[in-house]
Amino acid sequence: EDKVVQSPLSLVVHEGDTVTLNCSYEVTNFRSLLWYKQEKKAPTFLFMLTSSGIEKKSGRLSSILDKKELFSILNITATQTGDSAVYLCAVILNTGNQFYFGTGTSLTVIP
Amino acid sequence: EPEVTQTPSHQVTQMGQEVILRCVPISNHLYFYWYRQILGQKVEFLVSFYNNEISEKSEIFDDQFSVERPDGSNFTLKIRSTKLEDSAMYFCASSGSWPYKTWENTIYFGEGSWLTVV
Image (cartoon, rainbow over all chains, first blue to last red; front, top):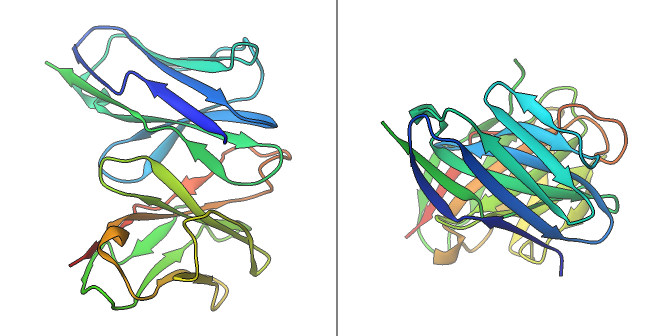
């Protein structure tokens, strides 16, 4: 069975800290990995990663994919309280159009 | 910015009743999805819909569930004979093109419909 695992499950940090969130996957016919941020309700898109080793960056957030070791990391530098959310990783396959989500990492940033 | 809209935002229903959750996907999108998230658990795929038919469904999506695109804009999820364990946030989503061909902006989610079965 295809699987997407995220770690840690939850994390509490102070403002200004840097965090690294992990997502590993065991799937067949991997196409892309996506990161989403879920605050109160709907997940909002952060990054899509298809090629290994190419870092995607948006402000204080960055992400990279390792297709050999089958994982991705999401880095957030200089965290702010507004970064508090659940961060979801999802994998999409070549063979279908559904997204497989991990359980998410709950990040809490305290002032 | 285009968005997926869902109604109702919250519904409370008695066990055994039928509910219909409504979604208006982004207007030029072709692919529509329903996902479910039980409180504290992960987002789970239910069904995808393309060209007026189901293209893929998960094990969760059994005969209790059905989807429909009754007109050019709405996409509905019907849950018959609701059970307590159907209580969850139901997300509708849409995307513009077949995910494994060229596409830019991935899947857009609606704000969700909280279903509470009592």
